[in-house]
Amino acid sequence: MDPISIGLEEAAELSGIGIVQLREYVKTDSSFPAFSVGRAKKKIIIPVAEFTRWLNERGRLRIGLKTQSSAVAQIIDRRRRERTGT
Image (cartoon, rainbow, N blue to C red; front, side):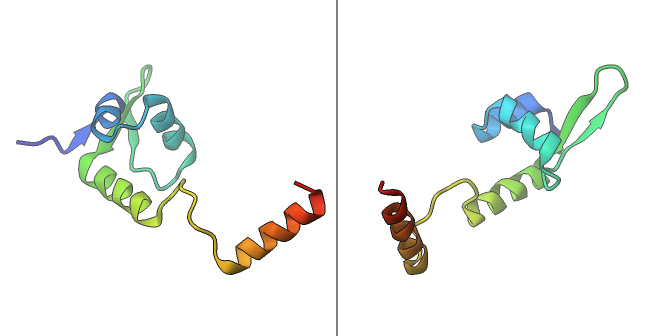
């Protein structure tokens, strides 16, 4: 039977995302599917199905990737470079 939840270490191994980056998502991304348990040493729990959905959505939206600019964005970039001389 597959686990329904995993810890940060397992999520890092499963996804190829570094544990430091995952910790950052836990702290700053309200869409990241995680919760903590315990008092002294809080353990982060990540539901596998929601983590998979979160990864798929980020991939679908191409989060963090530069995409080919639109014609308007290319014009704006060109004019900025002309003004700054770069």
